[in-house]
Picture 1 (cartoon, rainbow, N blue to C red):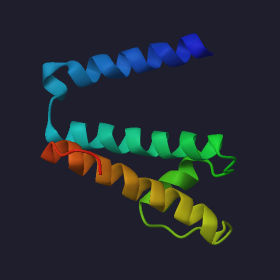
Picture 2: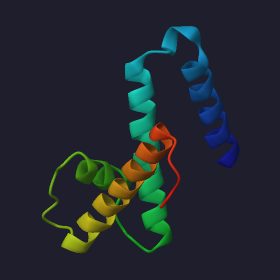
Picture 3: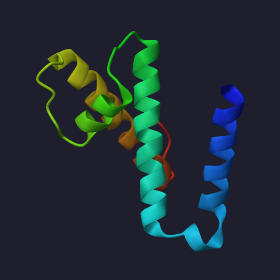
Picture 4: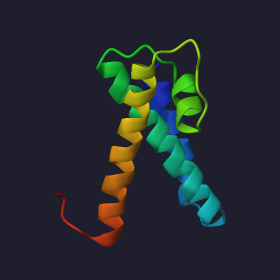
Length: 96
């Protein structure tokens, strides 16, 4: 399973690096996927039981009635932190 996962990552990386794929939309899509994966896996380490699909839905603004407010805030607070760090990087500012 890990080998297959790494092969998938390699294939997707090759597509992103190809000259035909270097568009703003592709970069935005890759950034969104990376954020969702990052938030999902970080929260899973902390014991959250949200699925990857549920994590993405919350990021996209959907309220999941069968999930707690804590689950929602866990995802949204992590997203805010990521956006803050990305903004600092874009401005080349130090982390405060």
